[in-house]
Length: 257
Ligand code: A2H
Image (cartoon, rainbow, N blue to C red; front, side, top):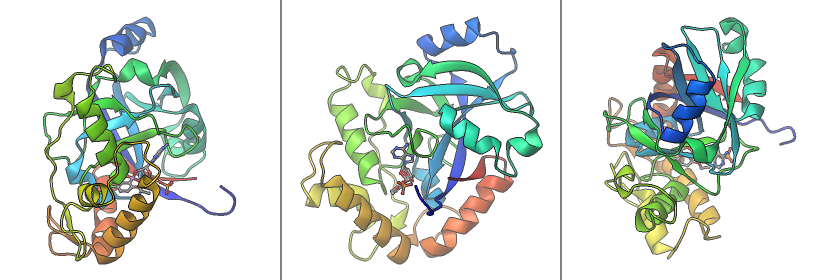
């Protein structure tokens, strides 16, 4: 924390169908029939959103659904993030209010299907568990881009290898990975390449910290887009363009903490 401000893009993933556990609690909370609930994922890499394959919550993390008084919009995020967002311009300040309507555990929402903006998976993607999600960072919701995030790739492999252990259905895990960014050293799938080269064996492997650092620096400073409307542009250029596109289309907002 301290004086460093982290600027995230908060991506809104609209709920298509709830998991059984979440549906029961939501019915009991009497949300209006036309309520639109969005999972809010904080990302530093908006230019990678084409490659979203699922969205992670911490199974043991506590979340809240808040009402925003805007077009029957409700947000799913940690209580901490909801309080932060309430004070940021362009969000609740204009939306009028931020009222907590329901508390949920991460485990309750696993198996919920959401629409991930820009993702090539147009029928939606699933909410899945990631044990390393921190309650104290961002919104506690992490959208999964396995091509460019070593953490996301390692978790995807774990989930796909042991669906029963994680209490998920194997078919909820998309293992097809879309190349989005070309880098000179690690090709067009930097995260899988690093995980393999560094012999990272699970989502809890300490070597992931280093892989994450390399992937972030190499992708950002050396990367070129090989997918989407900014194909051929540098990642440094595309990041701002895609952030603006997501915000202007109503699919994201700025979030700093
Ligand atoms: B990034 P920083 Cl493609 N717990 O988004 C754990 N991780 C979290 C989190 C939380 N509560 N909130 C956000 N994050 C992740 C995309 C991405 C990200 C790519 C590549 C690298 C990358 C897709 N997941 O992050 O500690 C989110 O994942 C590498 C640093 O604030 C967010 O951006 O620096 C990033 O960590 C924020 O990390």
